[in-house]
Amino acid sequence: MNRSFFKTVTALTACMCLWACDDDDERAHYDLDGGLDGSQSTLQDAAKSDSNVATDASDAQSADTGPSEEQGEIFCGSADLEPHDWILIEDATQGIGMGATFGCDIDAIEYSCPDGQKGSALSIVGHAGQNVTQTNFSKSCGSKSESCNTASECAALLGVSGSLLASFARNLQGCQITVFEQSDMENEICRVSHCSDPEHLTRCQWLFNINDGQTGQETVP
Image 1 (cartoon, rainbow, N blue to C red):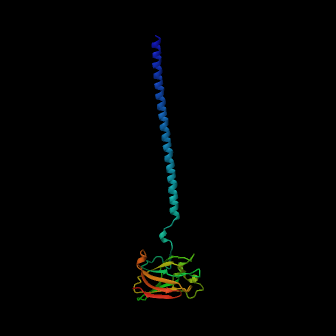
Image 2: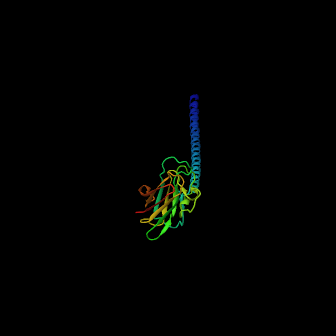
Image 3: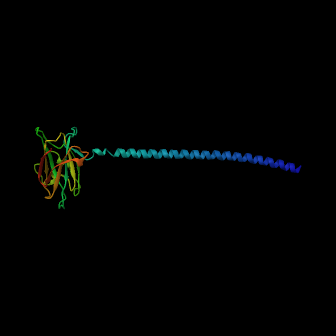
């Protein structure tokens, strides 16, 4: 009797234990899934938030940065005219200069064609070289200045190894190109070339060199 009673009690206890353990496992599994689901939701929300912040920052940066291809171009006249030819002027000065404006100083670039048409640059894109902290490339627009107290008053200061690319609203073939260099430092040298493609300046055709204070002329072949 006693052995049978103890066996029955033991069996019932084991069943109750199994039922309780299964219930705890289910609750634990439910809590774990809930925790994971909550964590995943939190991570997704955080990722969306970071993505929105990154997008906003990118949009702000795009808004602050304008089209780089337009920067640096100065129109001497109407911006509606189409450029057809270009003249490249590069400083080729050698040696050491004594003045702050050492380097070519371009007063004007003019053309005169067999058909009677005359004019000057349509627009200018300039690159300032060494020894020049600021320069106004619009000083090379228009005709030669009648009088100047200083080179910076009426000429674009290229500085050492500086350059400018002037566009013209017509084909310059057969036209005479005249470049006026403002007198400043006696050992300045400018190299003048004709360019039919502004995207490939290494293919420009050399026309002439001019020294400080000189006027250079040549017909574009």
